[in-house]
Image 1 (spheres, chains in turn cyan, red):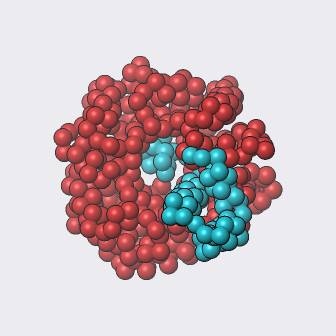
Image 2 (spheres, one colour):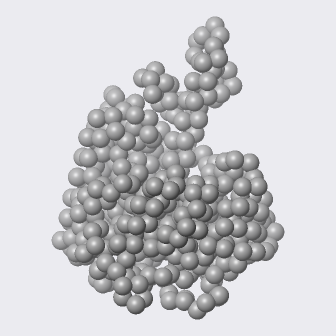
Image 3 (spheres, one colour):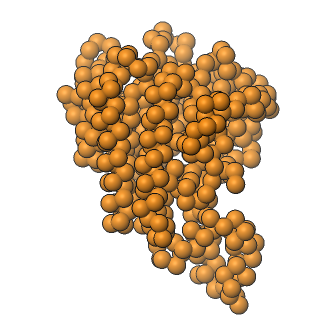
Length: 76
Length: 363
């Protein structure tokens, strides 16, 4: 993944206002006159990646043997 | 900012029956034939009911549990086929298995459902077979290796190896062994039993466990520095949480986006909870019954008073309501240690935070 897109992912993850604008008005969010089809695809990818991270954060915390863990009834 | 939630996970015990009798297992012996096995009819109902009840979720992960889920293939088959009637991505499947059933039917079903497989492997045969044996006392390690090989060669499933760290089996040795196998991700964690119980880590082993957690943290940093996604992702969620500046208001989403289902169709906030004390309804009910009961169950639970003064609370959310009654303060110690290591990983990349996106696979 390009450094530029990683920077965009980080900003969209940490700046809710920027993320909303990237969704609703990516041209303004990125300060461009217009977006090429490739650039729009990259914006979509960035937004999908941020959504994936949000899901990862929301998942059950790390120590348990339940969701994405393993073991009988999550205990042993 | 509160955590946004859009993905639902439902832990479904399709049977309490298990073909193994692991010495540290907490599941009561319910090997009594039909009782304790989900029927195909109920399995079909489950998919329909989850789709209706969790309409606002953008995906539903059905995580098969037990008992050993691969001992109830008819219910599993019905679920997988019923899910295929919905748009792609509406349902995803996961399974926690002991990996001892590698029949053609089981392997084909795992592939058909593109399951994420959580495979229990405690260590090499000498360690694994010390606890993980059939009721007749036969070892299971060799069968697990055959299962792993079959899944690898005949499916596109992602596999997470999962080891139970117990007295006599250190975290380090469990992690080292799992890393030697053809797995996509690994998890090795302390057995959840009250202190002093058989298999519980003693004081020295607990100190070693915490040192091993530190070493895993070092390994995560090394991997990220090298542009590699760490195989051991136990710290990933919390580090990303720190990166995103989110607070965890509850330990998990039980009762809202996480539910459990027993083989008899009892809906619970989580399958780890008591089917009598915590029942939300039944699969045969209108989904609104268990959805609304889940909201009430959740509202009635707030972090304990001791949690309010704990600096790990924003990254813990008050602990697992199923595990805390079993492990108590021991569980809190482990969570605090995990948060501490996660913080160290986060701090290491200060000023280079895009590197942390490697924890989400962006390498």
